[in-house]
Length: 208
Image (cartoon, rainbow, N blue to C red; front, side, top):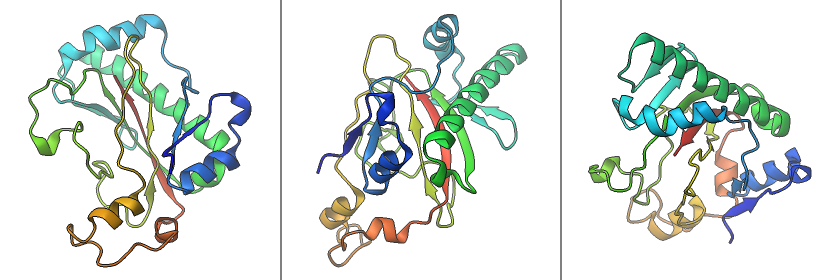
């Protein structure tokens, strides 16, 4: 099974086809970002100056509280970055509402994060490294049956964001579920779609 479902042209951005791809355990991929990014001066700041202000590996904007975490900077810089992430999150939410409306009913728009430096070469403990293959719903706490829809944008001007995947969750559980004590028999077809609810949350991220 091909994990990526590529949508290269605007005429392919029909809600039905993207929803079908997501519901069949595909990763929807856009060769070019479908949402507006900040201007070039702001992007240069995010790429070259922001890494010096990091307190954690991610800087996160929490819209429910208007709060910014992960940054060690003065009030003016904090306000500037909060505005950048708030605008980006609004752009992502507007795009998803326009093209994936059925998935946006009663949704909760979650955290918007930026990671201005790569993990490659950083001295991270294995449990904190995203370079290793892992199953990760994100640090959003209990979902209470809701699903998480994550939207990533690569804002590097010279390097692609390279993802490694082991395939759909059903196939991973078939292969490793018994060892992980989360499955004792073959996962039936359609298991993921039947056990998930129809209310997604929408975190957005701008990883470098």
